Image (cartoon, rainbow, N blue to C red):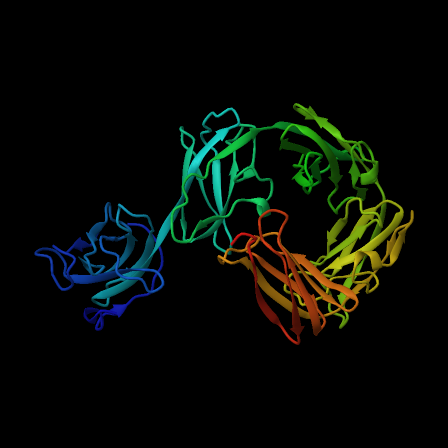
Length: 494
């Protein structure tokens, strides 16, 4: 802290709004105004994380009742001084107008005499481009959202009349998601031309702007309809579509209070799967009135179309999920799937550990997916570790009870990244022992993963997603206690 600040009180901070403080004739500390009150507020503006002073930063302060704030510009040393009478002031600090910075706001009280603030400003990078449709026409009002590879908030902006957009973000790695304007009937996508996050282009805005991220949105068609059960509309049902044009997962829409749904998709052929909510005794079904995926019929969707779905009833299996020490497990997922998988149905346990699944008579594989960070091992009934080893559970025409227990284990957490320090989303992480796969998962958008296993020695296998040029990696890992690992995948062409 500079010497002139030592005898001043550093005040606690809060937030926004703008009688105003008078600016000193210059930003030099200690200069008093020729008129007005004489209690000084001195502000030092620096870059975040130990950066230097921000020359030219704009410092404004005002009482809540003020019409306009008093402002001053920071000098080469990053300091500015304002003067006012005793009272509470809202202070806003902005970066130099010719640069891009994230504003900072504080609250300061001059009742006790002179005060000082040290404010760190965050420089911003810009992701920009043009949004068009496939005919080359600029799209106004489209929303472009930069998703960070971490826990920062998503930042969005809308395109102008010329189709251009600009998103100012903190330094970092991002993926861009774009959706058309309301009523524009353009299919949302990840940049560029990607259906899912793990396929999206990586935008490295850690040290520089990322211009030229142009996106061509595809015109879509709408499948709409109503979902009913026993003559009543069903709220909260999921209508899921999977295209036959590419090996991509289902994408789902939920019904509203009147049981209506609308799905905007690219024209083509789709499998359609309708999943009821867990508060009715209805079973999932495929188009057209099929109970299994292998019995489903592809829906032709060359233009807008209506598809109403009448759900059928089934058998309900319910029970309680506990840990081996007797603790009731809430927010776990209990999943039923057929030996030849045609669509796994999962229901969440409530505060008492209880679940209920309604399904058709059939032989099933039953598994439990524990809640995140619980330290519980995900397993199949009864104690099987993998789907092929799982015991069969027969569901008949009568309701039944099936209580389940899960074991506690040791968490293995970590992150997968490439050689440039960029997170690998959608990668596969597996732990093997002498009996086979002990646990497996995929990385999230920030490259993070979490597995739970019993203590022991494991073979660690890591594979990249199906897009990109990264090479998988195999190693050994001892798991005596909570483990944290960072895995770096090499590029084929570094």
